[in-house]
Image (cartoon, helix red, strand yellow):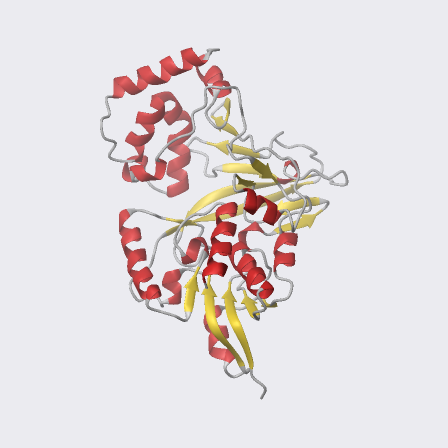
Length: 372
């Protein structure tokens, strides 16, 4: 049997793994990329259905102030001028996000920044919170009671599955409060959605690499020797605790369930790409309407997706690391194991147990490819 030896076995065909594979291939190294899913591109996977690019794993809006990363990603797709301006629904009230003068005007029937500042500052002063002990106190000390009760409390409790008073204050270091009538959610210099969806980016990044889908790492590792497949090093973008067989314990995550619905007779369901539902009684956190991200003339009807936060039990897809003190301490122990293991490099939000925006993932993958 002829043996095939790769320079890198890359576990995960998401954005981190794809960028790393592209850079290593450009360096003349041979890469094998495997993924347990039936498709490449990880959570940024988009699929065109009935003329609409559907974000299978929730909304992904590219934004960055890193000019090098912006230039890099534009090599693989042309971006439109989409600006993220989400809305929030609280009972029968509709608000602009992030918190800005449109939000404050709707909430308090005021017009000027001075009036808004006075309202927020008076509420904060009345609370007399000196050192916030949890997320609830942290949020209240930043924006006061009205914004917290209507636009933060219920949404956050749904998202994390815990009362706000039981969440660490560190989750909300700061809250974006703008005293202008500007609905652009991000402050970054560059923003947009790739015309034609995100999957094309991963396809181009993976050119030159061998790719195997529907491929679990543990099963493949056991079978590889029998098939004459070897590698010098591993880039692992799955959960770091999984790689070490949960030997030190399991890290905690929050998961999501996506409920996507096609409305063939509806051309415009909600008038906006993203609408958050902030009251605790509604089980989903937001509805996204995909056609507003990347409009297409030939689109028939519309697709909407409701996002339901879920407890992670080990079966669901892990989305959000629970970065509290206990989990951070456990991750640090796994990190100590990794630092002593020359065969493997960890990357991505699961391998590094950290939430990343897409531009930060690309930056981290580029740096990782240079360093290894």
